Amino acid sequence: GEGISELLELILLMAELAELTTDANKPAEGFVLEATRDSKAGVITTLIIKDGRLRLGDFLITGMIIGRIKKLANCRGENVPALEASSPAVVLGLSEIPTAGSAFASRNNKSGVEAIAAKSVNQVENPIIKPIDFPGQTTVFPIILKADNLGSLEALGREVGKLSTDTVTLAIIHRGLGQITENDVKLGLGTPPATIIGFNVRAERSVIELTEKYGVIVKTFDIIYHLSEWLAEEVACRAPIVEAEETLGEIRVLKLFSHEKNRQIIGGTVIKGRAADRERVRIVRRGNALGEGEIIELKQQRLTVRKVEPGQPFGALVESKIAIAPGDTLIIFTRGEAKVR
Image (cartoon, rainbow, N blue to C red):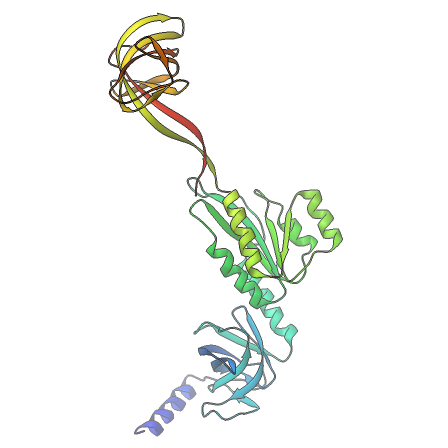
């Protein structure tokens, strides 16, 4: 404990020289030093008051978390009715653990801290939907979040953030408290249109009619994992569809027997995979793709067959506008649609 008195005198002297002042009549402001969760007491938060007076019973907001001070203690653990600037304060009453270093503010009523929260949300979120451009195969899934309280709203934001994939981006374009309103519907009118998700809130009949008119989707939930399941399914459905191609085999053309209009009879051998009738082929000459065609019929030893295995010679009737020549390679492939995950 040596030097403490001198240190305190030096701090007071520097505060006086810098003309640092506080106002004990204003609501408290400061920052969160640390926070823990006790199995019996709940969330215990240590605050540093930078200005104003913090009172027992005040409403507190830090980040998106709101609570009422049920217990106020000083640095010695003594319960006190109020604390002023420069004091550390231990409070009970927050429902969730706040982030260390985050700012806090207090008010003597709940509406006061909710007004701070609404202002903060509006500053962070952009309520105007604009086309969002992401490179590659990314699909944008714009969302408007509404909840009954700030704690739920913050939890929803974290849950939504977990569900984005490499090909589907969940973009929260606006979030707010209270029931779903006509203004939320108007905010959802964009390209692409937004989906409004409500948690423990509802939409009035007039709002539902407006969503039906403009084609805006509204989904409400009261259990968060139901919301997560629905969102995960929507993300899977919105994954972009691309044309997928699978190579089934390769044919080396050994001889051209006849050529009449778009039909050609060739002799060849399977060098990879297998050959089958009614399959598409890509005609490749000296490494360059010339065009496509289709195997109409396969024959081995004058017998019609459905497929030919590797290393076996065969004859084939191929339909194509491209003239096939000995030495060409025919790539057998199948093409279809697939979702990008």
